[in-house]
Length: 263
Image 1 (tube, rainbow, N blue to C red):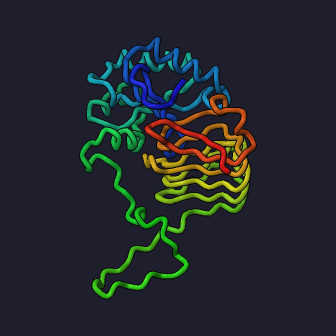
Image 2: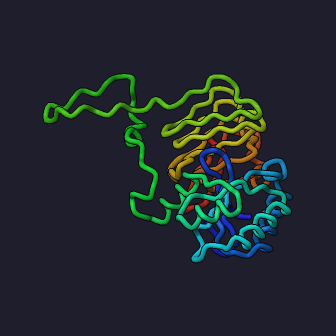
Image 3: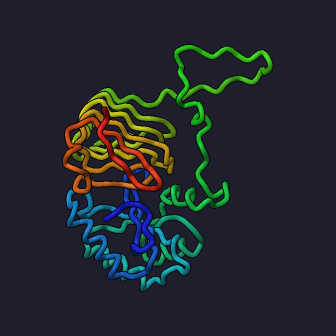
């Protein structure tokens, strides 16, 4: 099933910056939503079986009732996933979360808020050094004689020198991530910018975790369980066998996740 925005789907699944799946409900149809999640579990059981899911009702015109929400939670649990929280939103969602006994989690709607072009106050703030992230830090640039304003310092990015093992997670907040070793099966690497992996990628890699659609993933040996850019994802079962074991790059193009072998 395509992970690109598909308004014919009852629910669009994305991954946030902490690796928990965000299910934005677009159609309050419990049977359809449960069937879609059951299919995802059957196609990639190692990733989705008993996976933690945050329910996001921001795509609905009307908030579900307590009874409807409980029915949806039961349906999703029967499909094999575990709803653990509601995405933050209005005071009505806050009240609903208390009624059903689930917590509210913030930041899970960041990429949706950006794509919907809501007011700047509703979106997560952009990190100040992002615009200079590609500048070299080897030599400081000379100050312009016309201006006395200090130049911004480029972020060096996060460098992981040791293997990322199963169950571990490495997150590069507001910057790129470079991994000089292997990302093992069951491990997870995330970055708000790009991800560069110089060893084998056998776990999950999620770039553009806060909605940066220009982020990319590069790896030397591709065996990924899951790759995602700005929430759009593909699992191993969706990836051409011809790319396995090869150097690969992953990026977004017109809202669709693309993969290609590196020359």
